Amino acid sequence: MSGDAAGKDFRAPRALFWAALGIRLVYLTLAHTYRTPPANHHFEFGWETGRVAASLAAGHGYSSPFGGNTGPTAWMVPGFTLLLAGIFKLFGIYTNLSAWVILALNCVFQAITASLVYEMGARTAGRRNALWAGWIWALYPGILQYAVKWIWEMSLSTMLFAAVLVLGMRMRGLGAELPRTQRVRDWAWFGLLWGAIAMTNPTLLLMAPVEGVWILLANPGRKDWVRGAGLALLSSAVCAVVALPWIVRNELAFHAFIPTRDNLGAELAMAWSPDANGFPWGATVPTTEQAPEHQRYARMGELAYVRMRGRLAKEFARRYPGHIWRLTALRFYMFWCGVPHATGDSWKAQAAEFVRGSAYCFGSITGLLGLALALRRRLPAAGVFACAILLLPVVYYFVTAGSRFRNPLEPILVVLTVYLFQQAELRWGFSVFGQKTAS
Image (cartoon, rainbow, N blue to C red; front, side, top):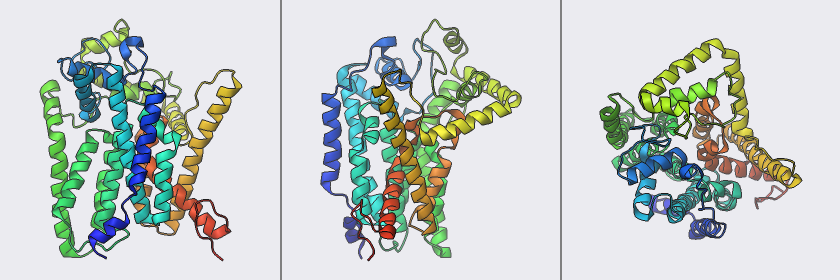
């Protein structure tokens, strides 16, 4: 089969993209989810990202993530922040129109991801899996919420991660013939996508070398390995070029090498504090300028403050190792089973919380069972799926927990969930996903 013909076999129906986009835009507009509360100087409009984007749009530079004029920051990478700053420049800082535009872009990112989920399913488990996985992604409210409510990077980073996984599948020839030779264009795109991911959600970079080696293993010949190694170096160079302006800026602003973010020490100090309870509540740096910790952050400067907090985190680790491991185990549980929400005494709120928590946990259970079955039956890409599920949550186990951190894994979990039920249909003779059962 030719590459063009094979590509058409994996192309998602246009209706999938337009349905995913239309549903999100209609909900965003009619439910007024673009209206953010003005409390605390609109801090809920993008939180730290919104603060820095507002600073950029107002001409004060990439600075001040917690309010006030606290100087340059590298608290978050610039990918989504620059996008939001551009929207602020065009449509106004913290306006409802700006909120609608950035959330509408999130809806576009999720609609594109629906098509990528389709191709991921088609290349690994067949067209029926692709249709169900794509439509679940397009229609499931638990996924939709991150586009229509959250002014944050989840929808963008999830789309980029799904795109680089699909690109790797194409380069491996999954579902089609293996390409006769590795192409410069593919590896250049590979590096470009990983560079964009590095500037959007650096945690995902843990998978870059894993996926690169996985692609190279498709070409076992020595000649192919030599060419592949050269192209992998080219890809790394492209990724580095994407990140270079940010690295240079940080060197000039802080006189330090900061390839992605500088906030890990502060995050660990909050996560490992003797007062920490494992829940992702509270602020690393208070957003009110009168708070003593905010004043200390402003007085010391970000890099000195983060390094001071990092030393404190190391002290906590030495003094309270059991406490830290208990919190890590709790965050592991919350990453996969959900963070409990306060509901009050209303039975309706408690019922809604039960449904929410059960649905979130169900997706984890079915996805992980689907992964176990895929590994056992050597489903194409099962190994790289397993590496993503194993590696990407590790940082969050030690630092913070929350459903949004699982979002980049959702395309994989959806494909694996559908695969699990389709195989169950074949084994036990019932039909949920339209799979032809064995006679």
